[in-house]
Length: 376
Ligand code: UD1
Ligand code: UDP
Image (cartoon, rainbow, N blue to C red; front, side):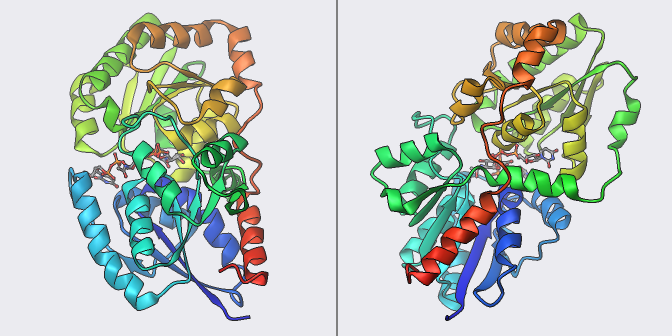
Protein backbone atom coordinates (compact mmCIF):
# COMPACT_ATOMS: atom_id res chain seq x y z
CA UNK A 1 0.00 0.00 0.00
CA UNK A 2 1.29 3.47 -0.88
CA UNK A 3 2.03 5.60 2.17
CA UNK A 4 -0.41 8.46 2.69
CA UNK A 5 0.85 11.95 3.37
CA UNK A 6 -1.00 13.32 6.40
CA UNK A 7 -0.56 16.92 7.48
CA UNK A 8 -1.66 18.19 10.90
CA UNK A 9 -2.40 21.92 10.86
CA UNK A 10 -2.98 23.85 14.07
CA UNK A 11 -2.13 27.03 15.87
CA UNK A 12 -3.42 27.43 19.41
CA UNK A 13 -3.07 25.78 22.81
CA UNK A 14 -6.35 23.82 22.80
CA UNK A 15 -5.84 22.51 19.26
CA UNK A 16 -2.38 21.24 20.20
CA UNK A 17 -3.69 19.51 23.34
CA UNK A 18 -6.57 17.87 21.46
CA UNK A 19 -4.48 16.81 18.45
CA UNK A 20 -1.53 15.43 20.45
CA UNK A 21 -3.16 12.00 21.09
CA UNK A 22 -4.07 11.61 17.41
CA UNK A 23 -0.58 12.57 16.23
CA UNK A 24 0.95 10.09 18.69
CA UNK A 25 -1.46 7.35 17.60
CA UNK A 26 -0.84 7.76 13.86
CA UNK A 27 2.92 8.02 14.39
CA UNK A 28 2.78 4.37 15.46
CA UNK A 29 2.15 3.46 11.78
CA UNK A 30 5.17 4.84 9.89
CA UNK A 31 4.64 2.31 7.09
CA UNK A 32 1.17 3.64 6.38
CA UNK A 33 1.35 7.35 7.20
CA UNK A 34 3.94 9.95 6.42
CA UNK A 35 3.08 12.47 9.16
CA UNK A 36 4.00 16.14 8.93
CA UNK A 37 3.11 18.84 11.44
CA UNK A 38 2.56 22.47 10.59
CA UNK A 39 1.85 25.08 13.25
CA UNK A 40 0.62 28.52 12.32
CA UNK A 41 1.55 29.64 15.85
CA UNK A 42 -1.59 31.75 16.09
CA UNK A 43 -0.57 31.33 19.73
CA UNK A 44 3.14 31.37 20.47
CA UNK A 45 4.02 30.83 24.10
CA UNK A 46 0.86 28.88 24.98
CA UNK A 47 1.30 26.64 21.93
CA UNK A 48 4.97 25.98 22.68
CA UNK A 49 4.08 24.97 26.24
CA UNK A 50 1.92 22.17 24.85
CA UNK A 51 4.39 21.10 22.16
CA UNK A 52 7.03 20.69 24.90
CA UNK A 53 4.70 18.75 27.18
CA UNK A 54 3.77 16.23 24.49
CA UNK A 55 7.20 16.27 22.80
CA UNK A 56 5.88 17.32 19.40
CA UNK A 57 8.32 18.91 16.93
CA UNK A 58 6.65 20.81 14.11
CA UNK A 59 8.07 20.39 10.60
CA UNK A 60 6.79 23.83 9.60
CA UNK A 61 6.17 26.90 11.74
CA UNK A 62 4.52 30.04 10.27
CA UNK A 63 5.08 32.01 13.49
CA UNK A 64 2.22 34.39 12.68
CA UNK A 65 1.25 35.62 16.16
CA UNK A 66 1.30 39.36 16.75
CA UNK A 67 0.23 41.23 19.87
CA UNK A 68 -3.50 41.97 19.77
CA UNK A 69 -3.91 40.36 16.35
CA UNK A 70 -7.22 40.70 14.51
CA UNK A 71 -9.16 37.96 12.79
CA UNK A 72 -8.17 39.53 9.47
CA UNK A 73 -4.48 39.34 10.40
CA UNK A 74 -4.75 35.62 11.18
CA UNK A 75 -6.71 34.86 8.00
CA UNK A 76 -4.37 36.69 5.69
CA UNK A 77 -1.14 35.30 7.12
CA UNK A 78 -2.28 31.69 7.37
CA UNK A 79 -3.84 31.61 3.92
CA UNK A 80 -0.77 33.15 2.27
CA UNK A 81 1.69 30.77 3.96
CA UNK A 82 -0.47 27.71 3.38
CA UNK A 83 -0.80 28.29 -0.35
CA UNK A 84 2.91 27.67 -0.74
CA UNK A 85 3.18 24.86 1.80
CA UNK A 86 0.29 22.83 0.37
CA UNK A 87 1.62 23.26 -3.15
CA UNK A 88 5.01 21.95 -2.02
CA UNK A 89 3.92 19.17 0.32
CA UNK A 90 0.85 17.92 -1.58
CA UNK A 91 -0.67 16.05 1.39
CA UNK A 92 -3.38 13.43 0.81
CA UNK A 93 -5.21 14.46 3.99
CA UNK A 94 -5.08 17.39 6.39
CA UNK A 95 -6.24 17.24 10.00
CA UNK A 96 -7.74 20.28 11.70
CA UNK A 97 -9.31 20.54 15.14
CA UNK A 98 -12.09 22.56 16.71
CA UNK A 99 -13.21 26.03 15.73
CA UNK A 100 -10.28 28.42 15.78
CA UNK A 101 -9.52 30.71 12.91
CA UNK A 102 -6.42 28.63 12.13
CA UNK A 103 -8.62 25.53 11.79
CA UNK A 104 -11.11 27.26 9.51
CA UNK A 105 -8.53 28.91 7.26
CA UNK A 106 -6.45 25.73 7.06
CA UNK A 107 -9.52 23.80 5.88
CA UNK A 108 -10.33 26.54 3.37
CA UNK A 109 -6.80 26.39 1.98
CA UNK A 110 -6.95 22.58 1.75
CA UNK A 111 -10.27 22.86 -0.07
CA UNK A 112 -8.76 25.31 -2.57
CA UNK A 113 -6.09 22.68 -3.26
CA UNK A 114 -8.68 19.85 -3.41
CA UNK A 115 -7.06 18.05 -0.48
CA UNK A 116 -9.21 15.89 1.79
CA UNK A 117 -10.00 17.35 5.21
CA UNK A 118 -10.52 15.54 8.52
CA UNK A 119 -12.16 17.62 11.23
CA UNK A 120 -11.78 16.63 14.86
CA UNK A 121 -14.38 17.87 17.36
CA UNK A 122 -16.91 18.30 14.57
CA UNK A 123 -20.55 19.20 15.02
CA UNK A 124 -20.55 21.49 18.07
CA UNK A 125 -23.17 24.20 17.66
CA UNK A 126 -24.91 26.87 19.71
CA UNK A 127 -26.99 27.88 16.66
CA UNK A 128 -26.24 31.54 17.49
CA UNK A 129 -24.15 33.18 14.79
CA UNK A 130 -22.26 35.47 17.18
CA UNK A 131 -21.96 33.22 20.25
CA UNK A 132 -19.24 32.29 20.53
CA UNK A 133 -17.71 34.71 18.05
CA UNK A 134 -16.19 33.81 15.63
CA UNK A 135 -16.04 30.14 16.65
CA UNK A 136 -19.67 29.30 15.83
CA UNK A 137 -19.22 30.44 12.24
CA UNK A 138 -15.77 28.85 11.98
CA UNK A 139 -17.16 25.45 12.89
CA UNK A 140 -20.25 25.72 10.67
CA UNK A 141 -17.98 26.54 7.74
CA UNK A 142 -15.66 23.72 8.74
CA UNK A 143 -18.66 21.41 8.71
CA UNK A 144 -19.28 22.39 5.09
CA UNK A 145 -15.62 22.02 4.08
CA UNK A 146 -14.62 18.78 5.79
CA UNK A 147 -14.72 15.29 4.23
CA UNK A 148 -14.44 13.31 7.47
CA UNK A 149 -16.17 14.53 10.63
CA UNK A 150 -15.02 13.16 13.98
CA UNK A 151 -17.84 14.13 16.33
CA UNK A 152 -17.17 13.97 20.07
CA UNK A 153 -20.76 13.05 21.01
CA UNK A 154 -23.97 11.68 19.52
CA UNK A 155 -25.51 15.16 19.85
CA UNK A 156 -22.72 16.64 17.71
CA UNK A 157 -23.37 13.93 15.11
CA UNK A 158 -27.06 14.86 15.02
CA UNK A 159 -26.13 18.51 14.41
CA UNK A 160 -24.07 17.46 11.40
CA UNK A 161 -26.82 15.20 10.04
CA UNK A 162 -29.28 18.12 10.27
CA UNK A 163 -26.90 20.15 8.13
CA UNK A 164 -26.86 17.46 5.46
CA UNK A 165 -23.54 15.76 6.21
CA UNK A 166 -23.66 12.13 5.08
CA UNK A 167 -23.76 9.63 7.94
CA UNK A 168 -20.96 7.53 6.45
CA UNK A 169 -18.62 10.51 6.79
CA UNK A 170 -19.30 11.00 10.51
CA UNK A 171 -17.78 9.01 13.34
CA UNK A 172 -18.63 9.53 17.01
CA UNK A 173 -15.30 9.22 18.81
CA UNK A 174 -15.54 10.97 22.17
CA UNK A 175 -13.44 14.07 22.64
CA UNK A 176 -9.70 13.65 22.13
CA UNK A 177 -9.17 15.99 25.10
CA UNK A 178 -10.00 13.07 27.38
CA UNK A 179 -7.27 11.03 25.64
CA UNK A 180 -4.88 13.94 26.20
CA UNK A 181 -5.87 14.27 29.84
CA UNK A 182 -5.33 10.55 30.46
CA UNK A 183 -1.97 10.70 28.64
CA UNK A 184 -0.93 13.62 30.82
CA UNK A 185 -2.09 11.93 34.02
CA UNK A 186 0.07 8.90 33.11
CA UNK A 187 3.20 11.04 32.70
CA UNK A 188 5.74 10.83 35.49
CA UNK A 189 5.09 14.18 37.09
CA UNK A 190 5.55 15.21 40.72
CA UNK A 191 5.73 18.96 40.49
CA UNK A 192 3.08 20.96 42.27
CA UNK A 193 2.40 24.50 40.99
CA UNK A 194 4.20 26.93 43.31
CA UNK A 195 1.00 28.93 43.70
CA UNK A 196 -0.49 26.06 45.73
CA UNK A 197 2.19 26.61 48.40
CA UNK A 198 0.74 30.06 49.10
CA UNK A 199 -2.69 28.67 49.97
CA UNK A 200 -3.40 27.75 53.61
CA UNK A 201 -4.70 24.23 54.07
CA UNK A 202 -8.45 24.05 54.51
CA UNK A 203 -9.11 26.91 52.11
CA UNK A 204 -11.31 26.16 49.09
CA UNK A 205 -9.75 26.96 45.72
CA UNK A 206 -11.87 28.43 42.94
CA UNK A 207 -10.04 28.21 39.63
CA UNK A 208 -10.98 30.91 37.10
CA UNK A 209 -10.13 31.29 33.39
CA UNK A 210 -11.62 33.63 30.83
CA UNK A 211 -10.69 34.56 27.27
CA UNK A 212 -13.73 34.63 24.94
CA UNK A 213 -14.33 37.64 22.72
CA UNK A 214 -18.01 37.88 23.81
CA UNK A 215 -16.79 38.58 27.36
CA UNK A 216 -14.49 41.46 26.41
CA UNK A 217 -15.53 44.84 27.89
CA UNK A 218 -18.50 45.05 30.26
CA UNK A 219 -19.09 41.31 30.90
CA UNK A 220 -15.44 40.80 31.81
CA UNK A 221 -15.55 43.80 34.14
CA UNK A 222 -18.74 42.51 35.76
CA UNK A 223 -17.25 39.05 36.28
CA UNK A 224 -14.10 40.52 37.89
CA UNK A 225 -16.20 42.63 40.25
CA UNK A 226 -18.23 39.53 41.10
CA UNK A 227 -15.04 37.62 41.94
CA UNK A 228 -14.15 40.37 44.42
CA UNK A 229 -17.60 40.03 46.01
CA UNK A 230 -17.27 36.25 46.29
CA UNK A 231 -13.93 36.67 48.07
CA UNK A 232 -15.36 39.26 50.44
CA UNK A 233 -18.40 37.14 51.34
CA UNK A 234 -16.50 33.86 51.73
CA UNK A 235 -13.39 34.00 53.92
CA UNK A 236 -12.56 30.34 53.25
CA UNK A 237 -12.15 30.88 49.49
CA UNK A 238 -9.00 31.59 47.44
CA UNK A 239 -9.25 32.35 43.73
CA UNK A 240 -6.47 31.26 41.41
CA UNK A 241 -6.72 32.82 38.00
CA UNK A 242 -4.21 32.04 35.20
CA UNK A 243 -4.75 35.11 33.06
CA UNK A 244 -4.93 34.70 29.26
CA UNK A 245 -2.19 36.86 27.64
CA UNK A 246 -4.59 38.55 25.22
CA UNK A 247 -4.27 42.27 26.16
CA UNK A 248 -8.08 42.62 25.87
CA UNK A 249 -8.22 40.26 28.83
CA UNK A 250 -5.01 40.77 30.79
CA UNK A 251 -5.15 44.57 30.96
CA UNK A 252 -8.62 44.93 32.52
CA UNK A 253 -8.21 41.84 34.70
CA UNK A 254 -4.94 43.13 36.16
CA UNK A 255 -6.44 46.59 36.64
CA UNK A 256 -9.50 45.24 38.46
CA UNK A 257 -8.01 42.37 40.46
CA UNK A 258 -4.29 42.94 41.02
CA UNK A 259 -3.30 42.97 44.69
CA UNK A 260 -6.71 41.78 45.88
CA UNK A 261 -6.48 39.64 48.99
CA UNK A 262 -6.99 35.92 48.24
CA UNK A 263 -7.12 36.49 44.47
CA UNK A 264 -3.97 35.11 42.84
CA UNK A 265 -3.40 36.25 39.26
CA UNK A 266 -0.83 34.06 37.56
CA UNK A 267 0.52 33.46 34.06
CA UNK A 268 -0.94 30.60 31.95
CA UNK A 269 0.38 27.34 33.38
CA UNK A 270 1.93 24.45 31.48
CA UNK A 271 -0.54 21.65 30.88
CA UNK A 272 0.67 19.31 33.65
CA UNK A 273 0.68 21.92 36.45
CA UNK A 274 -2.65 23.18 35.17
CA UNK A 275 -4.20 19.74 35.49
CA UNK A 276 -2.70 19.45 38.96
CA UNK A 277 -4.33 22.74 39.85
CA UNK A 278 -7.68 21.57 38.45
CA UNK A 279 -7.47 18.47 40.60
CA UNK A 280 -6.79 20.58 43.71
CA UNK A 281 -9.61 23.01 42.99
CA UNK A 282 -13.00 22.90 44.64
CA UNK A 283 -14.85 24.62 41.83
CA UNK A 284 -14.06 26.01 38.37
CA UNK A 285 -15.45 29.20 36.81
CA UNK A 286 -14.56 29.39 33.13
CA UNK A 287 -15.60 30.34 29.62
CA UNK A 288 -13.19 27.75 28.18
CA UNK A 289 -14.42 24.79 26.18
CA UNK A 290 -11.61 22.36 26.89
CA UNK A 291 -11.60 23.04 30.62
CA UNK A 292 -15.31 22.16 30.84
CA UNK A 293 -14.58 18.79 29.27
CA UNK A 294 -11.56 18.05 31.47
CA UNK A 295 -13.38 19.19 34.60
CA UNK A 296 -16.15 16.70 33.88
CA UNK A 297 -13.56 13.92 33.66
CA UNK A 298 -11.88 15.07 36.89
CA UNK A 299 -15.20 15.31 38.78
CA UNK A 300 -14.98 19.07 39.30
CA UNK A 301 -18.11 21.22 39.04
CA UNK A 302 -18.02 24.02 36.49
CA UNK A 303 -19.91 27.31 36.28
CA UNK A 304 -19.77 28.42 32.64
CA UNK A 305 -19.15 32.16 32.21
CA UNK A 306 -21.05 32.28 28.90
CA UNK A 307 -24.59 33.02 27.73
CA UNK A 308 -24.76 30.13 25.25
CA UNK A 309 -23.08 26.75 25.12
CA UNK A 310 -22.20 24.33 22.33
CA UNK A 311 -21.71 21.62 24.94
CA UNK A 312 -25.29 20.94 26.16
CA UNK A 313 -24.10 17.46 27.19
CA UNK A 314 -22.43 19.01 30.26
CA UNK A 315 -25.66 20.73 31.34
CA UNK A 316 -27.76 17.64 30.72
CA UNK A 317 -25.34 15.41 32.62
CA UNK A 318 -25.38 17.97 35.44
CA UNK A 319 -21.60 18.55 35.61
CA UNK A 320 -21.85 22.21 34.60
CA UNK A 321 -24.21 25.18 34.89
CA UNK A 322 -24.51 28.19 32.62
CA UNK A 323 -24.16 31.46 34.57
CA UNK A 324 -23.05 33.99 31.93
CA UNK A 325 -21.73 37.24 33.38
CA UNK A 326 -24.71 37.84 35.65
CA UNK A 327 -23.36 38.72 39.11
CA UNK A 328 -26.42 37.44 41.01
CA UNK A 329 -26.39 34.09 39.20
CA UNK A 330 -22.63 33.61 39.63
CA UNK A 331 -22.77 34.35 43.35
CA UNK A 332 -25.89 32.25 43.94
CA UNK A 333 -24.51 29.17 42.15
CA UNK A 334 -21.02 29.56 43.64
CA UNK A 335 -22.32 29.86 47.20
CA UNK A 336 -24.74 26.98 46.69
CA UNK A 337 -21.76 24.80 45.86
CA UNK A 338 -19.62 26.21 48.66
CA UNK A 339 -22.31 25.65 51.28
CA UNK A 340 -24.37 22.64 50.24
CA UNK A 341 -22.53 19.31 50.26
CA UNK A 342 -25.57 17.73 48.63
CA UNK A 343 -25.57 20.19 45.71
CA UNK A 344 -21.84 19.72 45.30
CA UNK A 345 -22.06 15.94 45.41
CA UNK A 346 -24.91 15.93 42.91
CA UNK A 347 -22.77 17.80 40.38
CA UNK A 348 -19.54 15.86 40.81
CA UNK A 349 -21.18 12.45 40.73
CA UNK A 350 -22.60 13.01 37.23
CA UNK A 351 -21.17 10.85 34.45
CA UNK A 352 -18.60 12.51 32.17
CA UNK A 353 -20.35 12.80 28.78
CA UNK A 354 -17.24 13.75 26.77
CA UNK A 355 -15.49 10.47 26.13
CA UNK A 356 -13.57 7.47 27.40
CA UNK A 357 -10.04 8.31 26.23
CA UNK A 358 -10.19 6.11 23.12
CA UNK A 359 -11.03 8.78 20.56
CA UNK A 360 -7.60 8.67 18.89
CA UNK A 361 -7.83 4.89 18.46
CA UNK A 362 -11.27 5.24 16.84
CA UNK A 363 -9.90 7.88 14.47
CA UNK A 364 -6.94 5.64 13.60
CA UNK A 365 -9.27 2.68 12.91
CA UNK A 366 -11.44 4.86 10.69
CA UNK A 367 -8.38 5.88 8.66
CA UNK A 368 -7.22 2.27 8.36
CA UNK A 369 -10.68 1.37 7.07
CA UNK A 370 -10.45 4.25 4.55
CA UNK A 371 -7.04 3.04 3.42
CA UNK A 372 -8.12 -0.53 2.87
CA UNK A 373 -11.18 0.65 0.93
CA UNK A 374 -9.30 3.26 -1.14
CA UNK A 375 -11.48 6.04 0.28
CA UNK A 376 -8.57 8.46 0.34
C1 UD1 B 1 -8.09 31.69 20.20
C2 UD1 B 1 -9.28 31.13 19.45
C3 UD1 B 1 -10.32 30.61 20.44
C4 UD1 B 1 -9.70 29.66 21.45
C5 UD1 B 1 -8.52 30.33 22.10
C6 UD1 B 1 -7.85 29.40 23.04
C7 UD1 B 1 -9.81 32.21 17.32
C8 UD1 B 1 -10.56 33.28 16.65
N1 UD1 B 1 -9.93 32.14 18.67
O1 UD1 B 1 -8.55 32.83 20.89
O2 UD1 B 1 -11.34 29.93 19.73
O3 UD1 B 1 -10.67 29.33 22.41
O4 UD1 B 1 -7.59 30.73 21.10
O5 UD1 B 1 -7.07 30.08 23.98
O6 UD1 B 1 -9.16 31.45 16.67
N2 UD1 B 1 -1.35 35.80 23.08
C9 UD1 B 1 -0.05 35.84 23.55
N3 UD1 B 1 0.60 34.63 23.70
C10 UD1 B 1 0.04 33.44 23.40
C11 UD1 B 1 -1.27 33.43 22.92
C12 UD1 B 1 -1.96 34.63 22.76
O7 UD1 B 1 0.50 36.88 23.82
O8 UD1 B 1 0.69 32.41 23.56
C13 UD1 B 1 -2.08 37.09 22.91
C14 UD1 B 1 -1.62 37.86 21.66
O9 UD1 B 1 -1.63 39.23 21.96
C15 UD1 B 1 -2.70 37.54 20.64
C16 UD1 B 1 -3.91 37.50 21.55
O10 UD1 B 1 -3.47 36.84 22.74
O11 UD1 B 1 -2.79 38.52 19.64
C17 UD1 B 1 -5.13 36.82 20.99
O12 UD1 B 1 -4.84 35.55 20.46
P1 UD1 B 1 -5.87 34.88 19.41
O13 UD1 B 1 -5.37 33.52 19.05
O14 UD1 B 1 -6.16 35.81 18.31
O15 UD1 B 1 -7.22 34.77 20.22
P2 UD1 B 1 -7.60 33.94 21.50
O16 UD1 B 1 -8.50 34.79 22.30
O17 UD1 B 1 -6.41 33.35 22.13
N1 UDP C 1 -4.82 25.14 30.00
C1 UDP C 1 -3.46 25.10 30.32
N2 UDP C 1 -2.95 26.11 31.11
C2 UDP C 1 -3.71 27.12 31.59
C3 UDP C 1 -5.08 27.17 31.23
C4 UDP C 1 -5.60 26.17 30.42
O1 UDP C 1 -2.75 24.18 29.91
O2 UDP C 1 -3.18 27.99 32.30
C5 UDP C 1 -5.38 24.08 29.12
C6 UDP C 1 -6.63 23.40 29.65
O3 UDP C 1 -6.30 22.29 30.46
C7 UDP C 1 -7.37 23.02 28.38
C8 UDP C 1 -6.95 24.05 27.38
O4 UDP C 1 -5.81 24.71 27.92
O5 UDP C 1 -6.96 21.75 27.88
C9 UDP C 1 -8.08 25.03 27.12
O6 UDP C 1 -7.62 26.11 26.40
P1 UDP C 1 -8.42 27.45 26.30
O7 UDP C 1 -9.27 27.63 27.50
O8 UDP C 1 -7.41 28.52 26.01
O9 UDP C 1 -9.27 27.25 24.98
P2 UDP C 1 -10.71 26.63 24.64
O10 UDP C 1 -10.74 25.23 25.13
O11 UDP C 1 -11.76 27.50 25.26
O12 UDP C 1 -10.79 26.74 23.15
